[in-house]
Length: 304
Ligand code: ATP
Ligand code: ZN
Image 1: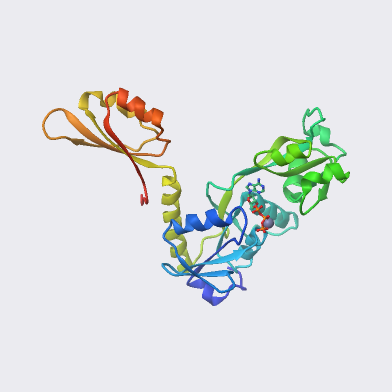
Image 2: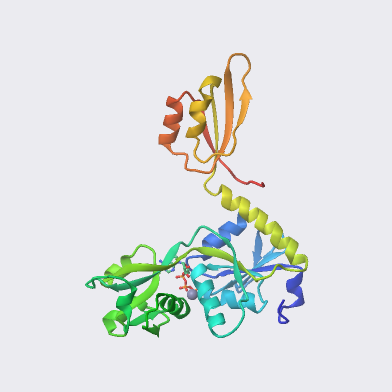
């Protein structure tokens, strides 16, 4: 626990999220789906938790790991790329880790990749020896180069990394890629992936030893439920009992279904929580195998 944390932070949980940008809305929506709601401050930098003592601080994503390290915030939603980079910087500077990934959140997916001019005939990392590589992720790039045993020069740029080769600042770049369209527009192509990234819930290295510990546990339980059911559906249908062995393997990543005997005859009604995609095609397959009255329902909440 950092000595800089305010006493008020001890009985309420404070979560830092991005104020605006790619992760801002999905982070809020995910936390709201855990039953949290807030009253926003006039300056829109702080949101006071109403349903639970869990407040939000709206900041730049790059500030989130530092806010956790300093004890200003307890948790944060940030890209794994930012978290790992800042952890790498701390450790390269001889400091201990002060934050870690608590949960992967399944949105904000991208990868940190090495990109080279399209004209290069890419044969592997050894080709980078003696070259300049522009990046905003010096710690991750340096660690990767060391791992590969390649001696290249890391050129630190804070933005517009993809134009560095055209400006003559570097021969290659190491940057975030999602579709690759930005790279193509700059006559670059992605080669090796250094890090697969997505938004994560970040927290301190050790668990909280006060009332925030219980709050964090409650939040994690709800979060795990919300993440698990994100793409889940409840599938209901009826079928003759004898076709069950054909139907059950067709259920997309389902938990053990509930089977109820129908009044009179050999019919049963089934209820199955499916975590895989319940597509039209899958419904048609189930119907061909003997299922009737198929119904797909959204799942709003789940507590294991
Ligand atoms: P801030 O003003 O908060 O510093 P930013 O410009 O650094 O904003 P965004 O561009 O909103 O941040 O990106 C936030 C995070 O979104 C990235 O760190 C990364 O984890 C993720 N992300 C997903 N796809 C991409 C992408 N194509 N390019 C950049 N980041 C991406
Ligand atoms: Zn940023």
